[in-house]
Amino acid sequence: MAHQEKKRLKIGVLISGSGSNLQAIIDACESGLIDGEVVFVGSDVPDVKGLARAKKHHIPTFAVNYKEFMRAARSFDPAEKVLTESDSDFMKKSLHIVPRSITSDEDKIAWLYRRMAFEMILLEHMEQFDFDLLVLAGFMRNLTAFFIDQINTDPAKPLIMNIHPALLPSFPGTNGYEDTFNYGCKVGGSTVHFVDYGEDTGPIIGQITVPILPGDTLDNFKEKGLKQEWILYPQCIQLFAEGSLKVVTADNGRKKVQIG
Image 1 (cartoon, rainbow, N blue to C red):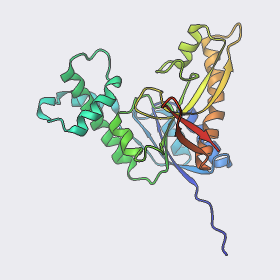
Image 2 (cartoon, helix red, strand yellow):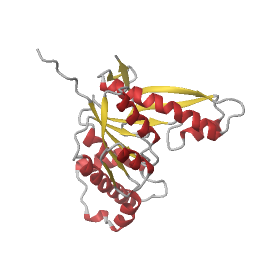
Image 3 (cartoon, rainbow, N blue to C red):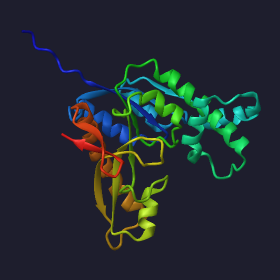
Image 4 (cartoon, rainbow, N blue to C red):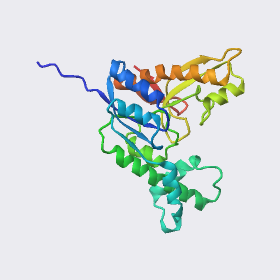
């Protein structure tokens, strides 16, 4: 019987900046630490260093300028759109990502439709590629329920993975390292988790700790933490590639990840 080659994991990556975690993932794929390959890299910011990293490794890239898109789409009038039942559900699940400066219900709806339109363009680019897992590597946009549901078509098999610079569930949000350091914690770290509708609330896959020593500054704490991220993220992606991650419901009703 002919030997059947094991299928390699096809990884899509979204970034917003320099792409140091992206580089760690690419290196891990090329060295065999991840049984997979990066098949595309997309960004919401044009010309960032992460896109150049991908091109250096001959990985297809695309960019959709988020700030320009949202600025150009401000003329959208939500009164022209009749909310369907599915639209209403999407809105309810995504309200937490609307900027706090937007207060009226009408403006919140308009903003969410603009964000959904932006995500539709991202999805159009992504549809060109056959991928098994979407990895967020410093992608600085919270995803709407609309986008998440396009990728996570089976609730039992989430396909979007993120890394967060804090030991969740503590310090969710955009400033994990800063919040950890400023709170006075003696230990920080990072968390890899599947993405759900909440902000950094998805089932945790793995965590790694970083001590905060006397004399540490925020900058060197971040530097130590980032180096640990480069270890943790590839390890978690490889667990996915091996089929070792299973999402189950705990006794308290929350989703958790079983490894094995």
